[in-house]
Image (cartoon, rainbow, N blue to C red; front, side):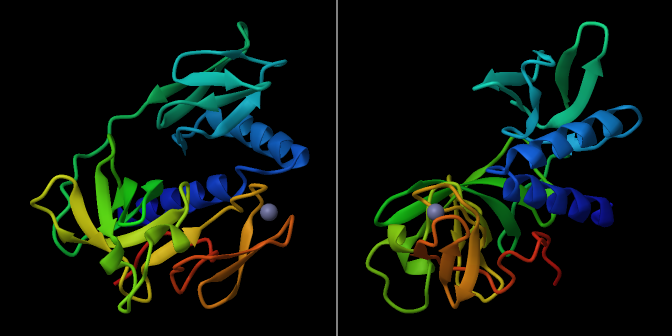
Length: 228
Ligand SMILES: [Zn+2]
């Protein structure tokens, strides 16, 4: 159902937004997961922070790092209270084939001068697993000339783009269009949340550094879903 998919996209946004969150937020998120696990099918994603290692053992579908337990797969969280073990059970996903015109959302995995690679998480508002990769050539970032893709895109940025060639591997996509571009970004120096302060201009909420990004018109709005 489309409604559910958009909800899961928005949850993904919130998780990413809180990725570099404060200790207080972590506590809130941990409690949330606790309450949810009893009866819900709510999903977590690779990299979602689930708990602290002082309280739980990292079970299958998770990994521990620096005192925290993170999900290593997309799936539903379960907690064994006797063993104090937290696991994520991978959830099988619908197989979705991207086509020309599909609107996709994913994370930038690599940036070079001539192109960026994107690990796709959603195709036409439906979660995809395992992920596809698409690339955007530097000429498909702006209508005008851009010297280098790394001027306006950073690894880790969450972006929305449109597939323009689905027959090649990797898929080819474009950022040209007001609803396409970066949706969530973090400071390349301190990891702080970036707020939009102007067209394609972001300011770090922690260190106040200003960086340039090719932003979608709804950057930071909390809606990753795309409505035609
Ligand atoms: Zn910063």
